[in-house]
Amino acid sequence: MVVIFTGITTILTLRRFIRGEIENSQLAQFNNFLNACSDALYLGDNLAIQAASESLEKAIPELAYAVFVDDSRNGIQLGGIESVQRIKRLRPVCPERDRKGQLPLKFDASSGDSSWRHFCLPIQEVNLRGERVSGTVHLGFNLNMVNSKVDGFIERIWPHLLGGMLVALVLGLFMAFIIAKKITRPIAQLTEGAKAIGEGHWETRIPVESSDELGFLAHEFNLMSTKLKELDDLKDDFVSSVSHELRSPLSAISGYAELLRMKPLEEMAPEKREKALVIIQESTERLSHFINDILDLAKIKSGQIEVTRKPFSIKATVEEVVRLFQPLIEKKNIQCFVDISEAIPMIQADGEKIRQVITNLISNALKFTPSQGKIRIIAKNQTDSIHVLVEDSGVGIPEDQQEIVFEKFRQVKGQAAALVSQKGTGLGLAIAKGNIEAHGGKIWIESDIGKGTKVHFTLPMTGVEQWPKNES
Ligand code: ATP
Ligand code: MG
Image (cartoon, rainbow, N blue to C red; front, side, top):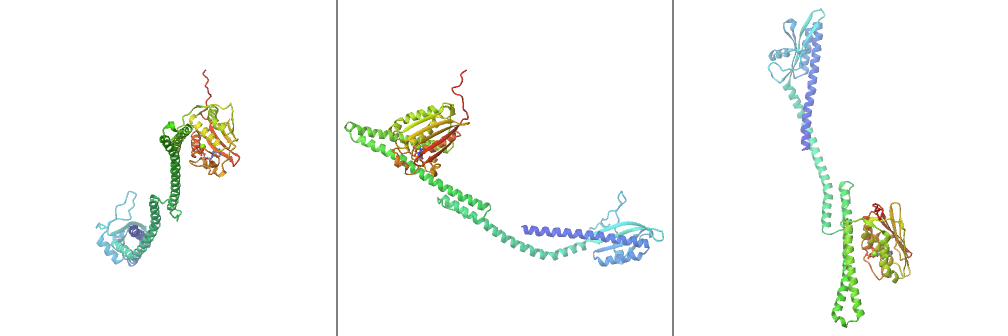
């Protein structure tokens, strides 16, 4: 289509251009003849007009006539024989002069036949002898001949143009084919890749061959499948952790419940019965604790965590949590120091969530600190936040794991088994991080293996209120 359109436009433009050129040259010839007539009138040399007319007849085949009509001598027509005969036959009429006395240079012959182009201009001269002579210069062209000349020219150009168009067509098709191949191949690869990933082949990768938009798309596609693979692994980990966490307390409950049913209760040794009931109760608590953690984590992940800010005292909360852990502290013979500045104001925070954080940090410190160890809980005022530190002299966390223990189900391998009777699920720090960040704070770990761990968190003081409020 483009080639055909270009061909037709070229021909039309060429035709218009050639016609324009011919019209310009006709005007130039009229001017020449006009000058020749003026000179001849001045010299009184009629033969010169005739000679000029004849030479034009010979030189320009499409010339119809070149004639001077002498008004001063009753309309005698001067020019070549053919010119004089033709002007007699065609009898062109000069148009009326306009208001300024000028004549237009172009008008139709009197026959109204559009196949003629006629130029006409009256002139006046004073000849050598001082006589005033006047007349009209006429020049006419046969436009049919001009047209067939243009057509002939175009006909000669056609085969060359057609050849060029054909070459352009073949080249264009060839290039289009190559470009289409270049575009469709990666698209086909992307389609294949998407299909493979849809079928669960996460390892699928698409070769990135170009640096254009398609290459970028392939690159993004590969990133997406890596991410999907990670998510799939995470899902597997999650499912295995969850099923383990659910299965072990459930089997404990079911085992001990069965034991209790085997014999009448009175026949069972009281300590055995007590032990079974304690295990059933602990397992139930563990299950409900785990389910709550999972629900909290789901809320944190989906960004639905709601922070209900109320006046909250960090000092009171820490002291209360420490009191709850007192039996364990005493059992492990751990020295526990609480150092909280009196100057710490009440802040606006979700007391339940911060309490959950402090409980997990203290529980971790106790879990991972051997007997006779030390625990310190320090809270201080900073310019725009409160800084809390839970420090222990326990086993420590390797440097490369200090970030990842904040991810769900992440636990430092080997360490828990060596130390602790009470195992966790690896959710506490993930929930703590979610809670602290929901308050606009930060949480981080500093730790030296074998020396101890410091877990810091900050809570911004936005919304700090003087509490109790001045009742006045
Ligand atoms: P949960 O808190 O869900 O009952 P958890 O205590 O194992 O289980 P997190 O509180 O998230 O889980 O802690 C993740 C891991 O980080 C722990 O299992 C432990 O390996 C390591 N960790 C956390 N706190 C300490 C600490 N004070 N000292 C040494 N290791 C720690
Ligand atoms: Mg914990």
